[in-house]
Length: 269
Image (tube, rainbow, N blue to C red; front, side, top):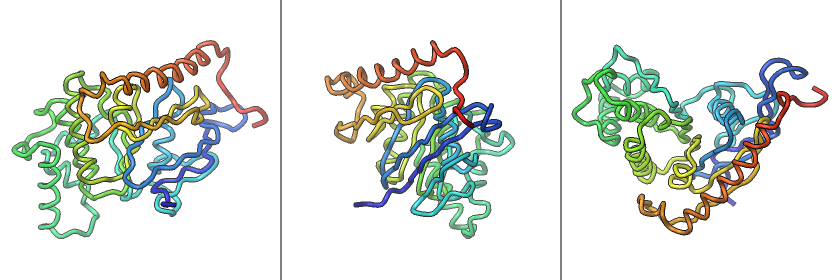
């Protein structure tokens, strides 16, 4: 059996004290296979982003651990690239410098850096915009710069937290197709957080639905739709049936969170 690229083992997390703090994640375990594209969905506040930040090494879990290629995660690392909803670009740097910044401590020669930066700028469709500044770019173009920067040092895992959430529908669709084409070319492991069920199904090999806070993995849905995918697949009976099942599962958790009378805390902590 193939070893997982990412293994999340019994992760629990709370903000504040274990007795009275906000209990966010409850004994979450999951694995991501090499080259797999997995989306995580769930009601607002269920801990999706916290889970991603723990895998990224940006937050230490209260309990449990994360392994990448069998090695424990002890903080941020070059084996994991991260893309957030906000563009997190340096406004005083042109496109090429924003991408090149990720290679600052890489050990590559100047020529190797230039080649990598040029390759990934072209990969995300921004050739000709190398010297443009972020305020001269559209939202979709800025997010392409962020993706190029996350890919340029060739991470084993790409972690994406609602990267297209701030984009209009047309731009979002184009970005989804762009990301899939990049993923199909480079075949890295992707964990993708989204609120958009259509997006999750269209992009993914598997969709994981989390419970309301404290978040657990409620159900896994395997997406057995052929690749490469085009937008026409969204009207297929298989897609529509899968969407209905996922939406109903999320709705159950949303209703639970609405009738909750107090924040979820762990008994006995």
